[in-house]
Image (tube, rainbow, N blue to C red; front, side):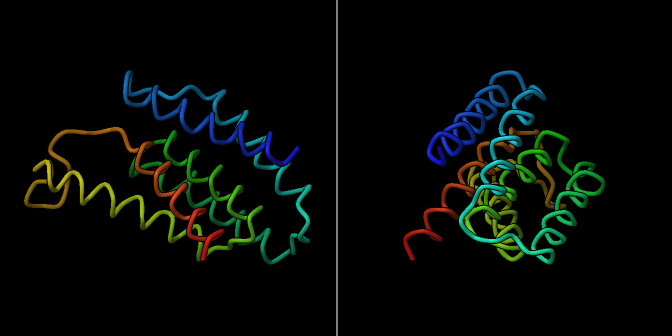
Length: 148
């Protein structure tokens, strides 16, 4: 069952990447499906989810929805929230969620810097889809967490 839930999350993230790259739009049903799968994964995990961990996850999601969504868009905030829920199911906490965000921004800065798409103020000259960077950072973080 856990493999099916992880598969749903992965497929939803890949679908979001494709739609973001092709149309600069990500459908909200993507987040309902993946968020539900991540929530079930979290609730049915073998590790007890403490009140402190729930507070960390809740605070992170609220920050995403009410603060960071103004910086980079709702779809990206939803993606970070779904990923954080899945990361919590893997035993990662607030530190892991923040590392994921930092890794996604570093990937964006590195690649867009090489493409010369960053102006002298540090902003992108031309907007680019952020979902592929979020997804790649998510996979890299989970790979590191499970192999190291």
